[in-house]
Length: 296
Image (cartoon, rainbow, N blue to C red; front, side):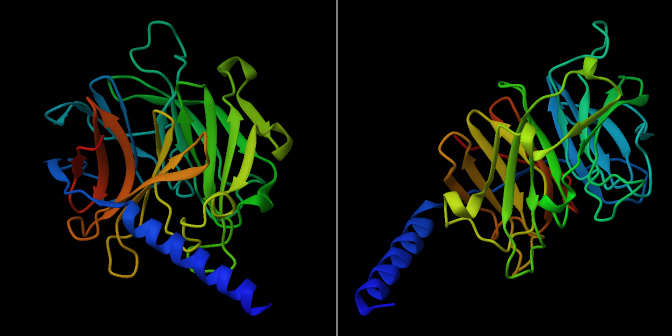
């Protein structure tokens, strides 16, 4: 590499670093309430539909709460996909109801398990849930190209566009060669049957965030996600010094970071999943219950 090329690379790096610093916004979360499950499992996926908040725990325990007070509505119950191999890492309400009389649309729950189980890995479980605390798995979605996500594939829903979005690390948050992959699929219909197989050829988009915007780090602890307007919100980190609580706001149309929300000074707990309610973002955490962010 010539001196001129080296200088240009250094200038580009300085510009990217300065842009990232300018990009970062600090926001203080406000406590909404504690989570009342009697199960000693870590809290994982969370999603909101109208005034209902569904909180999911590792292995597939779930509880429904009524917003805005976060009053407990149902006893903690088991999802249809309940299993020791179901990490239930992300939850997202879809756009279809299993039956027109159902009060809630179906919920998409990410297995996000690192090992292959019965030939399947990182299944997206589609759950039908009642307000009385009953659940059944009505569909399973599997990405057959298991090599694309070497660590764990997670799923969320773009309700506006009826898209199913797969996201996650290709190696791990500690690997030097890790990349963060986004895959966008047409959302399968319930009428497609109880089992849906997807391949890379079915994807509308398939890219690494780092190839589109180098401000997104390669070593990142991915947690949940939600789609807000044209953006994918990605909470990351364990709330610790070397893995701080940061939310990356990714513009899905431009494939670039719109913002970096730094919560490292005000949220020392592990963020798990995120959704929005009445214009605010609600984040499920381990150790602090549910917190709210005012962000526009």
